[in-house]
Length: 105
Image 1 (cartoon, helix red, strand yellow):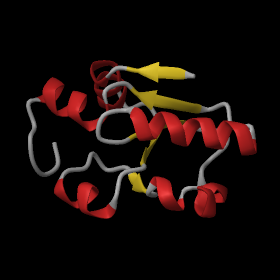
Image 2 (cartoon, helix red, strand yellow):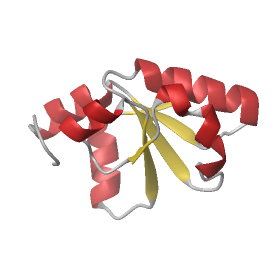
Image 3 (cartoon, one colour):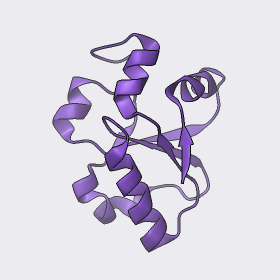
Image 4 (cartoon, one colour):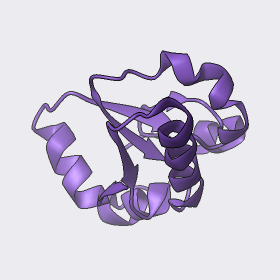
């Protein structure tokens, strides 16, 4: 499984790299703070797996990086997706790196 740090992801996004963000947290978590990712809670992931691009780089994230690892394992195991990257430390690492603690960065 590939991982990316919050710092590296922020730099790549700031550089204009085309990266799809996939948020596997719950709706209330996404509403409290998000970085613009497509919301697909882990509990509904397989129902919406067909909407995940196969050709683009997709960074999957959650609050701490655990649910996103589970999501990637499921998607790789059932669909063979190899374009998924886990945000190491999740939104908590993103917030720590950016100094943002509520709302959008």
